[in-house]
Amino acid sequence: MKKYLILLIVVVFACGISAKEYHVAKSGIDQNPGSSDKPLKTIQAAADLAQAGDIITVHEGIYREWINPSRGGVSDSKRIVYRAADGEEVEIKGSEEITRWKREKKGVWKVTIPNSFFGNYNPYQDLIHGDWFWDKGRIHHTGEVFLNGKSLFEEVTLEEVFNPKPDKTIKDQEGSIYTWYCENDESTTTIWANFHKYNPNNELVEISTRRTCFYPEKPGVNYITLQGFHISQAATQWGAPTAEQVGMVATHWNKGWIIENNVIHDSKCSGITLGKERGTGHNVWTNDKSKDGSLHYIEVTFRTLRNGWAKENIGSHIVRNNEIYNCGQTGMCGSQGAAFSVIENNHIHDIWTKRQFTGAEIGGIKFHAAIDAVIKQNRIHDCGRGIWLDWMTQGTRVSKNLLYNNDQEDLFLEVNHGPTLVDNNLLLSEKSLRHQSQGTAFVHNLIAGQICMWAEPNRFTPYHLPHSTEVAGLSTIFSGDDRYYNNILLASDKSMDMNKEVFHFGTKGYQKAKLPVWIDGNVYYTGSTHYEQEVNYLEKADFNPGLKIVDEGEHVFLYLDFDEDLLALANQFVTTQVLGKAKMPGQSFENPDGSPLQIDTDYLGNKRNEENPVAGPFEKAGIGSVKLEVW
Image 1 (cartoon, rainbow, N blue to C red):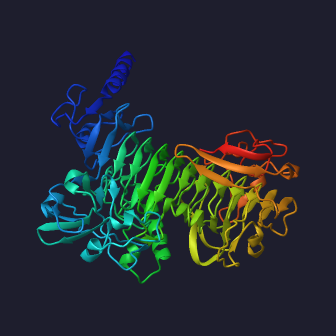
Image 2: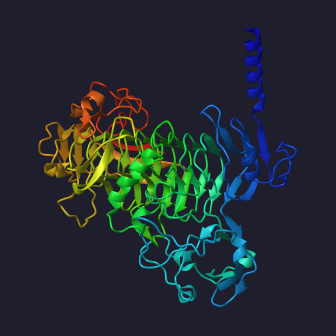
């Protein structure tokens, strides 16, 4: 017994002293031990040394590298942490600085670069492509050119660089005349760029050269923390759900990452990907048009299940407190790898602003199969589409998010069977909700714009056993099986072309739902109209609450008039018991651990009145004109 006790003490002691902190600094040498006084030079050198439980502290400077972690941690409490040193700005860039530009004419400059400069990946030979990618009839390279941190617009002819025309369909019309074009031969890549009044040899000019910035090339690299970095300018590829998804920061087919307190921007396609790997299919529809893309994705889903897609192996990530902007496809996307994850308190903005290409995988957040995921307290604006939850969204909660100024819609739920809970959100864009799903509960939201609801009889999509990735069955979308409790719904004062079969203000469109719906305790203003079978509601077409959102950068304020009649409604306190079960999976609206839930706090964290909660996302806003800080 004594021998075993001594052995245990030795093991514990050895584990305790094995954890190390590696330091990385621009002044370092990769042959150094990585101590504070003898730091390493590259983050990759530290990644090659780090073991479970170790910390990599990176000091101020710009690190132009792709970090390909060799290994991860072994548990949530014994992870490998990559962190920026306290109070120091650390940048990881997927680009290189380019000098020696030669003047052509009219503000256009040229540089010729040997192809050997790019190593085994040349973004100026690699075209964006993939399933559900639409190129608008032209080519798009994965590379980018940046002038003082701002990306230029790629053109497809040299003439368009010499004589650029502003794109009047986007916000940044002035920026769209800063253009570039490239050509290649066997040995060189030539780039022309119109810098207008700027001499590029006197400015910071960079070009994307790496396909990612932080990405383990192999699966099985779990429990990594990435904390406090500025990450930008990677030449990322289109992240289809049927492909290997490689964003600027990408978890690969792994589990338990924490991505927090970073500033992530200027990815050609996606900022963060929580996605699948290549072996279960890579752009399978593009490679085989003999079958519909939805059938291909069903096949991919079963391949991922055979490849270990389960809570024990995949997902359970935390992505929080990041700012993500200026990405061409998504701020964050993930096919199946976002399951069981928490996405919270991120500021995502200015996604898909150039609009030179488009596709079915674009948004501030775009997830497939976000099973038991929690998406809460995020601020998402100027993204085209805000949050897009597609296929196999089950057990997911979308709560207390602020969405505005998204010109497609704030929230799109596509071909899901639920249960999905959408509560206490501010959906403030002119198009608030695009709903091609069933089994969803909308509770205590402020919905300020259009609702588009319609069936999908032609696509069979999977639903799962509760709290599991295991497929229970497949079904089309009948429409209905939805709940609307205690929401405030408005009608936009702007006229829109609307197909009245699917677009509406309020819940009136649910008259056409095929499955039963439960609608109660909602408030309808400015022409928004109620579901005919709703008994307990307030409708005042002539009351305009004067909604206004004021974005002051770090802070956002909501101005709203609250009508005293709001308090006259007798509303239900919403719980798991009230919401019942989603029809197809037979699963209750409950917490990811299977415990019952209740909507007991409002958007601001105030306790709900359990006897008669106030409709909308604010329990204690008061009556009359109110100014609320909502971010």
